[in-house]
Length: 229
Image 1: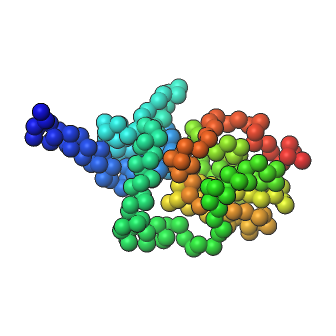
Image 2 (image 1 turned 90 degrees about the vertical axis):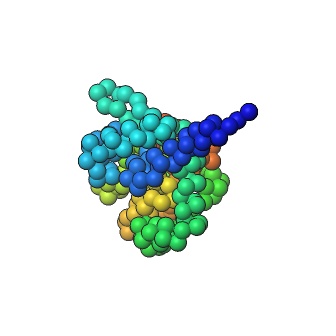
Image 3 (image 1 turned 120 degrees about the horizontal axis):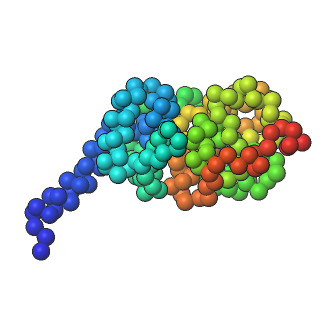
């Protein structure tokens, strides 16, 4: 028969995961996707030693795993269940805490780009007249991306914009519904005369919905402008 000590141990274990997530910087690291410690430190603007300490806490709680690639280690979410937990945390915060939604709106900027739902994107994926652009950093794209998407990181977009054909529909996506990368990409693309939309959420929600995912660079599936012609 279960006694008080066993129940307390169970709820303490559950609380341990919550405690690991109860830090804004750690949540920001989770939002970056799988990346090296150095890349995480740069993306989140945190010192390398602090990133390592935060990742250690997250690893001990079982929500982050690390793999080696040469001399570097790469950290990412431990599984789809962690991705689901992370998405639900965001939904609860936005739905029940007014400050969270206000902060999100301020972070993303004006709602002046056209959003596309996941179902609308799925309905259009067989069209030859659309190009899906993953505007996250290349490391995150390589770890996992929407099938058929082409990697075009936001910080490279302006200098590579001539690779994109006019007259096609461009659909950009970023990390999640809280990520402004796709919004910024669409603003830049429309300024240069392209017809561009953004996925209303992002790769996190795509993963949580158990939709198909590709990994690697798969360059043959993401041709440059010459091959498109």
